[in-house]
Image (cartoon, rainbow, N blue to C red; front, side, top):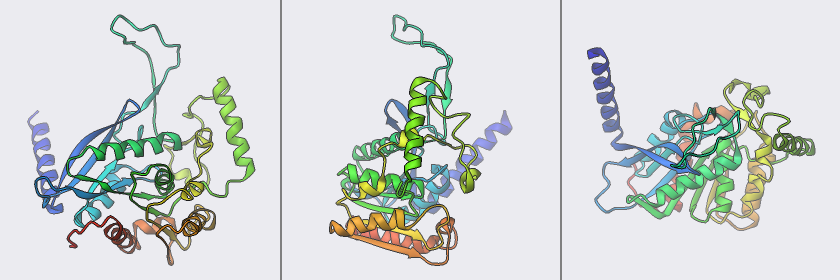
Length: 323
């Protein structure tokens, strides 16, 4: 017991010391999305004055990303620029609660309106319908934060999240600025993929396959390294971030890797940028030379994040200090 208590004290001290080094307060928050709790970390600059409202960046992760991983990496970078930053875990990812699936029919509720069931957790789903809602709920959470300027909320999404933020920005006017990094946007899907998704939706609805992929839905090819993830193409029907880019009015920056190996830059980032330009939206398209998809987190991290932070400073009119 004493050793356990000592470990807790050491961990707490390390966390406080880490926050002091950041010159930011990290608040652990709960965000509700369609009745399910999501875990979030709100990074608040220590020089925030009482009653002051700051421009805010909402970080949206890519495949398998969590707030303690890339979420913390980018939050630390942007909070140093003076922004309030929120990193969170989508429903069923990381520390967030998840939806449940019932292997047996639900019993009748008792007098208090509750039921006791045997359920299976639904975790690590790549579910565009759910995760775009999760992002919008995170925006709603920020709208209620006293330190957040409601008119200066920007989205930063990377990889899978890079497509999600473009879709959200095209459908939610509360978004005032966007950075989409090495994005997968659903552009260039062949008809065969659409047919597969439609056929899968029929089977799921009729109970002819898993209603939610748990044993099925594993990622293949170069994405197989994400062994815990499950894809559900049926939930992506009607989702196309490239098309959503045609509805964006907020300033949008798209950053891609020259040697992108997971998707086509032309069918994703470039096509979205062309729509933005056609609609006279303030936008920029940057190609980071010499790197593949994951280079934005390694050798080109500083270059990419400077592009992003400068974009947020410029278009959120943050008037913040630069470290």
